[in-house]
Each structure stands twice: as structure tokens, then as C-alpha cells.
Amino acid sequence: MEKQPQWSSKIGFILSSAGAAIGLGAIWKFPYVTGQSGGGAFLLLFILFTLLIGLPMLISEFIIGRGSGREAVSAYKKLAPDSFWTVTGKIGVAGCFLLLSFYSVVGGWVLIYTVRSLYGGVINSGDPVALFDAVTANAGLTIGGHAVFMLLNILVIAAGIQNGIERSSKYMMPILFIFFIILVIRSLTLDGAMEGVAFFLQPDFSEITGEAVLYALGHSFFSLAVGFSCMVTYSSYLGKDVSIPASAGWVSIMNIFVSVLAGLAIFPAVFAFGLEPTEGPGLLFIVLPSVFAQMPFGELFLFMFLLLFLFATLTSSFSLLEIITAAFTKGEESSRKKMALISGIIVFLAGIPAALSFSVLADISYFDRTIFNLTDYLVSNILLPLGSLLIALFIVWRMDQALVKEQFELSAGRLSPAYAIWLPLMRWIVPVTIAVVFVYTMIQL
Image (cartoon, rainbow, N blue to C red; front, side, top):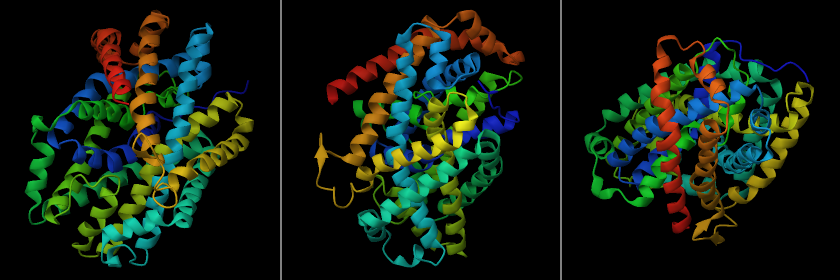
């Protein structure tokens, strides 16, 4: 077997992992799920689940990845020779495949909007709702955007860990933060913005339903890219000089921060322009043009933000295609380019029904959901909790605990006492919570 590739630096790993987590989950999905689930109360649940469930899970995946030095499927086989546990990695690969198949469709929308903004075709459209409906209903356009988005993924994954994923993350993630803050400042200065701030930050627990709790837990997994062993693959490239709990903490904090920024950018504008916070998947695409239309040089800022939003979307999708590609290359870097191409083409073909869910396949539904929405629900609320439950059980009840503790404390220094908090969370709180929510999901479905 060829030498395992590695991240070139700690910051490269953290930014790449944050890039995997910060993307459509934080910027696109979080605002509209929050809008549909009661606003501030959902935000509070999301933060609690992220810190008490998502963060311990992220640490767990980092430990499994670095402890094995293998990609998702092979990691479990190396750490537990009994064949049952390899199903955990296989669920991860299958889940990433399904997730990327519809994630790429949304990435295509972002790409289309980015190109249109170059010539004022977004701000000057007149009606952002009609524009979004027109874009998503155009079968050829959405499939084309989906194809180009997947091509960009293939090119980066084929370039490798350092030259592809890490290099892009190091430069673009900080710029994304800067532009998000600019958007938040502009949104907060709109007339009527405080009503949106109150909706987003003031909890109303009467709005919380069992489904909202389910979505909050599912989104804490989705937004941190845990449950599908993506971070097992990423951390398999990690050196021993990096603290796992510190790195996981930074990724979680950055993810929460961006999610809050997304809410502060979107909801003040939603209320200022009289839109509905329950708009759904199109919320970001409908609100952004209205916000930037009120700014000096709005077309330029909209283009730059969409370009950076596209990058954030890509950094998340890189991790999805990487786990699929790595599962087939199994450390043989010489076959990376070939497998990245084959994997990308198959994902593209599988995503076509989701791309057509807003046009020629709009009338086809299962369990009262379009193909796009059903795939999203299956990934976020069934496969993710199932994968997370298996990981939680594996790391505490099956993996060598001496190795677990060694990986946790490696380079941790003063953070090592966190092990005493992490272990009982993973032993009892995390698996029980996931199991309860998973059973509830099955009953509801």
C-alpha cells in the first residue's frame, strides 16, 4: 500500500474540516429549517444538540480516523476485525452518496445564481420568487448546473488532499467569514429588521414539536458532517501533533458561529421585506437578491457573496465525494483520479431525479414528499442518526479503550480533563438520545 497522504498543517486540517461542516448545512439549510421550526427555540435546541451530541460525535470520528489511519470502511475493519462493524462505514459511504446526489443539485442552483449575478440577472429580475421558481423549474438548466458542480468536485478530489481540498480551504474560508459579517451588518440596518432578530433569537417553546426536536438533532449531525464517517476519512490524514478535542471544538464553534450569522443575515431581511420565514428550500435564494438590492454596489457584492457561498458549498461536497472515492481507492493514491471521475459521474446520474423534482417530476411523490425532499429526509433523519448510533456504540463498547484514550489525549495538554466529560456523554447520553429520536422517526415515517 502506498504512503497515506496527510494534511500539511493543523490549520489546514481545521479549515478543511470546518469547510466540510460549513456549507449548505449552515448557510442554506439552517435558516429555512429554523424558519419552519419556530425560530429561536429551534436555534437553542440546535446549539444544545451540537455541543452535547454533535461535538462528542465529531471527536469520536476524529479518534476512529486517526486511530486507524484508514478511510471509512477500512477503519472499522482494522479496529474491529469482526465483520459486523464495517456496516458502519458502508452506511456512511451510501449516505454520502445519497446526500451528494441532492446536495449537488442545490450547488448547481448556487452556481447558476453566481453566473446570473455577473450581468445583473438576479437583482434586476424584479421578482426573486418568480426567478427561483423559473430556475428550479428549468430541467435543462438545473441538470447543467448539477453537472458543472460535480465536475468541480471531481477536479479538486482528483488533485488530492493537500493540493486540492486543503489549498482551497486555507484561502477561501476566512474570506467567507468577512463577507458574511458584511451581509449581517447590512441586514440588521434594514427597516423592520428587529422583528426578524426577535423571531430568530427569542425562544418560543410553544412552537416546538416532536418533529422540530428531530430536525434539530438531525441538523446538528448534518451541519457538522458527522454520522457518515466523513470525518473518519478526513482525520485518517491527520498527524499525531494535532489535538483532537481542540480541533473538534474549533470546528463546532465555527459552525455555530456561521449558523448564527446566517440567521442574522436572513431573518431580519425576511421580515423587513414582508416574506415568510417558512419559505422552505428557496429562502436563501429569494432573500439574498432583496438584501443586496438595497446596498450600494449591490450587484458586485451579490456576485462576490454568491461566489463565496459557492465555495462553502463546494468545501462541504468535497468531503462527501472524498469519502466515496477513498472507500474505493483504499489508500492507493495512484487510482485517485480514476475513482474520483467514476464516483462523480455515478453521483451525477443518481442526482438527476432530484434535479427534476421541481419540474418534470414535480408531481411524483412518496410519503407526501418529492424525490428531492424524500432524499433529504432519508439522509438527514434516518441514515444520519443510524450511522451516528453505530459510531457511538462502536467507539465506547467495541474499540480498544486504551487506543481511544491515547488518541483523545495526544497533544491535548491541558484539554485532557475533557475526556472525563466526553466518555460518559458517548457512553450513555449520546446513544440513548439518538436511539430515542431514531425510534420516533420510524414511527412518524
